[in-house]
Length: 253
Image 1 (cartoon, one colour):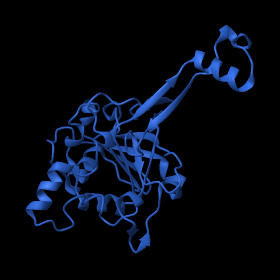
Image 2: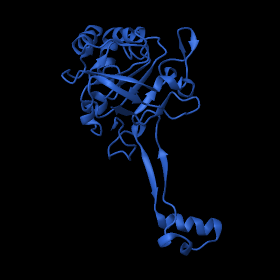
Image 3: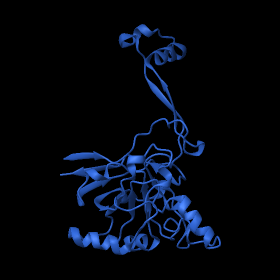
Image 4: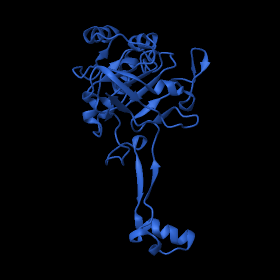
């Protein structure tokens, strides 16, 4: 089998990252580990091989949405289809290991819509029929901008109609290699305000009233065939969480 990593690393954010998007990590080296052992257990560094104690890291800042992650329905709304929305720790594990299908929309401009008809056309071209629990991945090529300041303003967006159609085919996990599943926030905001601020335009695919999961901020989708592989995307089990960071991996024969 061949394994392809579809996750970006959890790494300290570059300078200039807005505070609400930052990741900060403190790295503690082997000398610090030896000193810690001496302080707690009263043993000298000589008890360790080469005098080196344990290396550790402390994540001092990491939002659940600040790396490659899986969104739970709770992220979209508190109530979905008349029921309390599920949090990330409540979703079925069966959702997160299944056959994968990649749709290629790298030709789309920022803000373009990804429609039901375009998804169906690619399915016809690849000779594939979606089945329940397939994991659908949208390739936009915006992972090339992952650490750039304007990353969150790049990418096309999946329409609520296309999201609903995928759900009706039995798809419960949908992913994208852009910052978000919808159009970039600035474009959505402008359209919503031009329409008088009414609901149903801003964050439309998120708030389509469906209990599904999104994977956002994927990478390396260009390394995958259209289908014929498995995806493992188990999110961290964060109690009551709206999302969980995930190590997303494609497994090819």
